[in-house]
Image: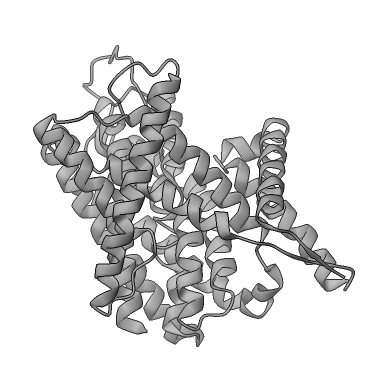
Length: 399
């Protein structure tokens, strides 16, 4: 029996999946501890149900995922509005250096994935599903690039990338805290530091009143998203004429970044950061819910051992890169140790994982204002932007 859901019904199921994920996160502490998002929890559970239906031949579910692409584009457009060069300058040289290091990590993750493809005997394009797409990019990039890789000939690309992203969330959370603690204790990095009585804001600051969303500002924020998405279709069309294969959202993300930096430099119009960020968060949740609940997990069975080997290589890379590149280049001090722990969080998962890793250490030792400035700005504003460009380059190179 095939159950066919139309566009609206699919959206309704995605909303139920979100509520289910939030319920489970509240009642299963380990899920919140590892910062596993509600749509990932609910979506994976739903996909297990569909796996049961498929393996028992009782039912299959067919989704109309039209709104998934709309939500994906809206989310990445909100990321584009966050790519402010003014913020990059505000963070100073350490932030610039860290962004450069992250770009290096993105390149290495993809090179390791390609190298492992020859070791385990899978196609290079399939191996990219375990590179920076799910590692630095997380579930958002996994869901976005999955269809693109499938079109390039990789069957089950979305399922593979999503599975890798879920593994990364857990691995990044388990790796960051212990590594940071070992660095602090081994090098006695708290010695000589005065008690830091600093109240840290662990989120990127945005202009305006963030205590509530005004209806007018919400409308304006949505309109700015819509304008950037509309302009983005023209940019994407122009890029397509060059023969390059970019994800559908890249034009909108570029348009949003241009609008944001025009606003920063000229002050000609305000950008409604808070409202855009909230809409971006909502559309990301719905996008992830739809992407995960429609996973065809049975496609992973034949790739279990190669997938484990490729992901193990990514954990080893992250450990070595954080310990021997990030820590020394960021100063070999207490702040560098906290940044190292945070890098493990979003280098294999997401920015919330990075924040959780750092918070666990600062609660035990001392605050680190530098780390809580650099990691959120780099993780939330610039990583997805550069990751999308680099991943697209690799896909075009290998296609």
